[in-house]
Length: 315
Ligand code: CP
Image (cartoon, rainbow, N blue to C red; front, top):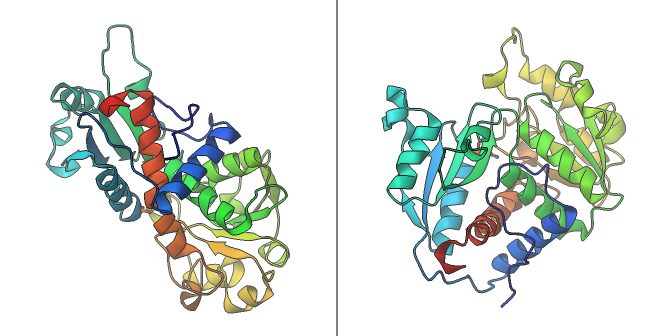
């Protein structure tokens, strides 16, 4: 049985920013081990987890729940709309309540950037003892998506060094773009950005170059498309899906110009005919389905890292 590497033991899993590249590699190795049918740790005591999704989700929510079930965690149901958060209870007090009744882990998605800080950076009098796993915070971070993306790239190429990755689309609103540019740079890949200039800003400059989609499409190894996030656009007036697709989307014509071994990635959900031509969603170069499959195993590895870090279940 492959032992959990000693350096992947975390109190919380809220961002990829502080992860070292050897931790990322160890998590990928662990996720691949689970994917290949490796033995799952047997907990000596039950570990209780709650999934708290304040923003909509299909992939991340169900994938975390699948990962929890595969690990043998006990899941405590939580519906934000029916919870006392609706009566004004703070996130901290909600977790304090769940912790008091025995919950060990909170897997949370929330619309507020860095919502997790008030749950993990405790004042001396605060005693909250619950591991927080970030399933996406506003436009901040999406650690599980980013790590499953790294796993998918690693499975394809066996390395990150010198790989050229284009992140294309709604950059400023994307927690996937932020998490991925940070990890890709750390792992030695060369990052490029493309898409509408109004969704590009100076914060991306330290991670990669901004180029025209048509210049990038012929030379990159990974075409990473981002969802156009209409729900986060406050000033949007006249977005044209047809125009976006022609200017920045992966059309059939652009697909034909990609390198022979290049791959397409998209975190989902996909706006078909906008970021990508509908016919290309399951095309030979697309790794969309593989990304979702890998997500379960990577989330198992992430949950295990926090369970081990907090010495839960006898680990
Ligand atoms: N990729 C992603 O986060 O998808 P969901 O919003 O469906 O979880």
